[in-house]
Length: 497
Image: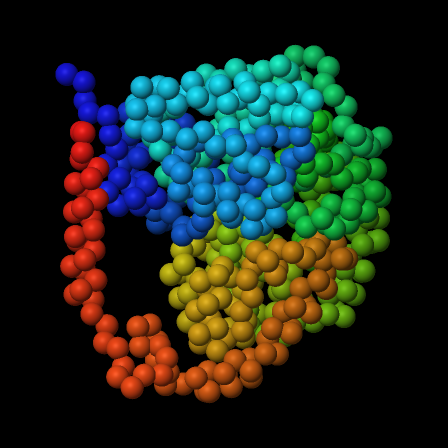
């Protein structure tokens, strides 16, 4: 007898990871999940608290020219993802293939996706169409790998980005970047491909990981004495840039968690180095690594170091940072920021990142640990907050809830993504870029203390505010009605099973 076709999502799709993962394995996605588990290990705890990971791959696609993006998933997930993408500046539509219980279990959803791709595939408008399975289609085994590789000359790239398989949105960027690199590698192996709009006459260094726009030109200046040039930044902004990225002398894993992308570059025979030209020590070590990977003469490397290191040291000295700072975030550049702060004079006792430890992050980890810094990969919110409590910093850099917690304790805090990532980090330009915003934030501690004193006694949580009769929290009521809600959801889910 055929087993019933349903997923028990009584607690909601985002909270049913084990159920969805088990269903995905039963539906033929075991190989995919094993690959993700190897590329993006979750330990020591289950998974960092982060936004839906598919937001990362969605942003990569939406930033590419002549690229259409199609999502297949629950309507609430698609709404949340598209809302967030437009909040962050997307200026194009996101395709959506809805489903019902019938289309999901009969296979009609795959046909609907294929029909949507065929209708979109206009070579006058698009170079590629990115189709993304969210949690429920992945768990149901919707086989995007069976989509045609191209329609009317428009490439079709299908990826699965389930929250139960890809831990963070940062790593989801790698899922799509790696898939596109593999596609482009296959095209290049099959024959001539379109030339990039801009192509250097010197060997190039591909920069792996999203970067502040001012950083690649600065990196290019440091590479010039070596006879090299800065190549494309991956994820790219246009399909043909993928060919230029693959046609490089060496890959610099600026963000060290792009495991699938590294695998594609290694398949193309390209060496990969870690870390980045951040601060004096970081720049010196990075130039040495680039020189070794490209066979550059030692005197050329020394000349480049002699040209740039004194200028970086001068910029750091001109913009000192004095104070204790904890650093945490989910972008992947947290270790680089900590290095720059330390070379600027700051005391950084803790660095937490939601991303995993890889061999490409080892140079930064070892440098930080040699200076007494506790480096926590796959950091949880609880670990980041515990670090704020333990070290009592003059400034906490972190995610929104970390910032909120620190400010509630009258500790100045800065949101990593919007206020730290949005600055250059590398070379001379990066050397003094953080000092102004960091020092200004630390100087506000007195204002935080005054506000905390002013609002002292107004309560917190259910009792926040000024009351004649202070509300009494009733957790027993909450538990009773939560149980009723769960029971009702299970009853509704069981209909037709």
